[in-house]
Length: 203
Image (cartoon, rainbow, N blue to C red; front, side, top):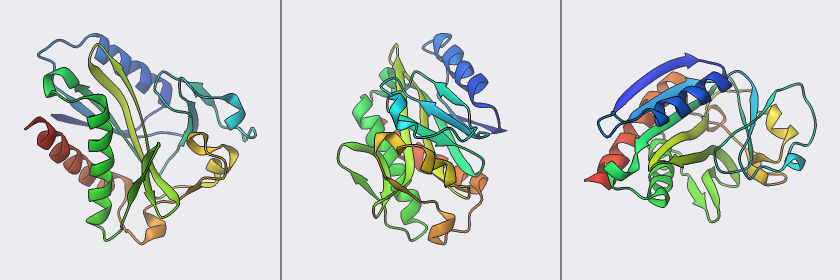
């Protein structure tokens, strides 16, 4: 599994690159994790309802092809895109979601933070505050899009939306929990946990 560290890149070209990568895949194409940060952007999933955008704060809104509702990406948040051949890995979509959530929970446990899932609300939570979001698109048995983990960012744009469609949902980040990692350090550790989970599922 190859890891591409792309740095801070604009959202739309990265999304289109994921679509192109997935469309051009062959059975021999390696699986890849893309680790990025994005400039401020709201993304609205396929089921996304415009009413979850509560007010215009001057941040662009991009309608995209992943599942889920609206979320925010911005500097200081690590985003990992999972470009995987699920058929080759013999992993079902639900298992992939569980593996991603478990990787985030294990990463946080390694930093002495207890995190959990909330039934019916994909993502990872510390108490009642969401720290990581996830959304995927599966095409021809292959996945793209992925997860975002709040590390050291301005959380105020989340107040302009109902995060993931939940009114009043609190959000938190690793810095507020006393974890001293930079986004790039958090991304490296999280990639390690993702690979462990995917190898476990595949193995």
